[in-house]
Amino acid sequence: QQVVAIRDYLQQFRREADGSQQSLAGPHGNLLIMELEETGNLVAVRPSGTETKIKFYGFAYRPAEQLSDLPRDLAELQARMDQVEKEMQQLAGL
Image (cartoon, rainbow, N blue to C red; front, side, top):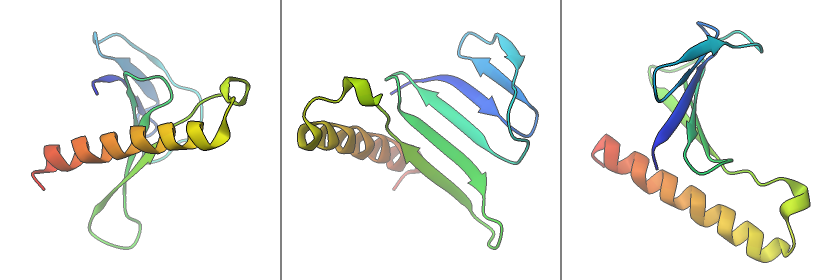
């Protein structure tokens, strides 16, 4: 999936893939959130507070009003996250 926007909570801006940028309201901290092309898919990136490594967190979201069959919807969200994890591992050369 392509990254469509990046939220930088340290610098307090959101940058679109086309380079346009706007101020970001919200918490201030050392955190980047990559918004992926499939709405609701996000990857958060931050340094560890206790170790010399970077941590990645994947998220898949669908509004509750769009959920109709919970087991099927959970399986689809899990498949989306599995794909994001696979792509992140490929980028990392794992």
